[in-house]
Image (cartoon, rainbow, N blue to C red; front, side):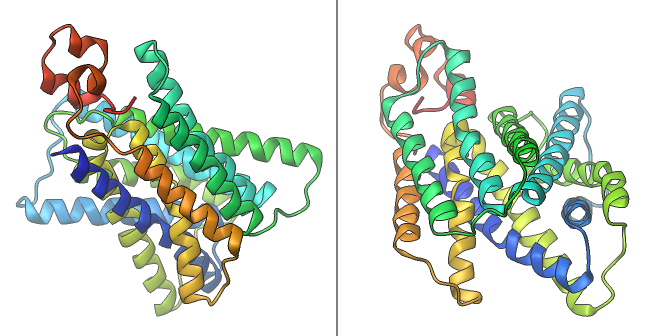
Length: 325
C-alpha cells in the first residue's frame, strides 16, 4: 500500500469517528445509559460484529496463531479500554471542550516526541508546523467556537485534565504500536478481537457507574447498531488499515479531523452554527493534515532517516517509519 492511499484510509476513518459523539449521545438519551455503558457497548458491539463477519467470510474460523498477534490484540484491548474510560470521565469532570482539546491535542505531540526519541533527532519542520497548526485549529474549533467548559473546582479540573492526558497517551500509544503490522494479523481481525476484549474490560466500570441496561426501544437499538458499526468498527478498521503506510505522526494529526467532522454534522443535522473562529479552526486542521502528509518521491535519506542512508533495506525501513519525521 502506498503512503498516499494509507493517508486516505486514515482520513476516512477519522471522519467516520465524527459521527461517534452524536450517535453516542443519542443512544445514551434514548436508552438512558451512562457514558461508561455506552463506551462498553460500543466496543463490544463493534468487536463482535467484526469477529462474526470475519468468521462467516472465513468458513467459521478466525485464527490468531502467533504470540505476536495475541500480544498486539491484548495491548490494543487494554489501551482502547483505558482511552474510552479516561476520556469519558474527563468529559464528566471538565466538559467536552477541554477534554477533547487535551486528549486529541496531546496525541500528535506525544507520537512525534516518541518518534524523535527513537530516532534521536527532531521531527521534520513541516511536522512541527503541522502540529502547531493542528493545536491552534483544534482550540479555535473546540474552545473558542464550541461548547464552553462547565464550571469545576480546582481539584476536579486537575483530575479531569490528567485523565484527558491519560486518554491522549493511550491513543498515542495505540498509534505508535500499530505503526507496524503483525505478520498474519489483519487490521479487521486485530480490531475485532481487541475491541471485543476491551468492551469486556469496561463492563465492571459500566456496572459500577450506571448499570448495564439494554435499550428498550427499536430506536435505541438502531443507535447502538449505528454507533458500533460506523464510527467504531468501520472507522477503526479504516484507520488501522492505513496507519502503517501513512506513518504514525501523519495518522495522529489526521485523527484531529474527528472534531471537525463532528462539528460539520452538528451544523448539517442539528442546525447548529459554526462561527468564524470555528471555520478558521477547520481550515487549520485541514492544513495540518496536508502539511503532515507523507512526501512522495523524497530521497531515502529524507524519507527514512540515517539507517536508510547507511544502505539498509528500503522496504523494511518504510514498513515502520514515518516518511516526514
